Amino acid sequence: MRTWTARSIMAIAVGGALALAGCNGGGDEPTASTASSSLSSTTTSSASSTTTASPSTTTSATIDPAKLPPEATEKTEAGAKAFAKFFVETLDQSQVEADPSTLVAISEPECQGCKIYVDLSRELAVKGQHQEGPALELSDIGVRSSSDGRFQFDLLIDERPTRTVDKAGAVVASFPADKTTLRVDFNWISNQWRVKQAVVVV
Image (cartoon, rainbow, N blue to C red; front, side):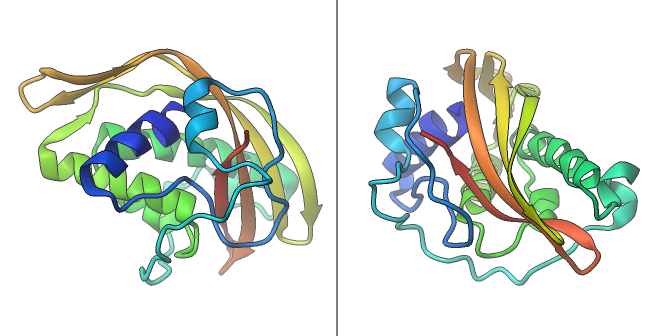
């Protein structure tokens, strides 16, 4: 996934503080699959060591249910899938707006994959940059496991070509079209779905 790889590499090169998307939580480790060279060089496989990102110290926040699509507020599989679509849109918007507040509100503090997007968004804001427009589209959802109030999904995501621009509209970086699979764990906490884990599958 371009935003988890190329941009993560850029952030690591600049600040040395970000590690690959992933969380220390429940669910299986990602299994090997076909991926681009950039993905395979930066993401965790089943044989790799765990992420080195420091645990987030952010206090768990919640989102106003009114800001969620109505169908994403239901404690059902359909509700969790609707929340998955909202999650992908939120990842995208955190980069377009250089504002991670909604992402923080739907994520648990231990979700290191979420934290990478939050940190990247904040870095864009500091630099006066943003993603030029929406780039992520959820094309399919695979159910890996489910129980009462818990779902693990594989989210198949298409990424349109996009660019990072500064306040003047000058292009800072360009990214080609791409595809990826994002494995997520959603838990029903405080009467709403929350992201416990997000990791790119390779």
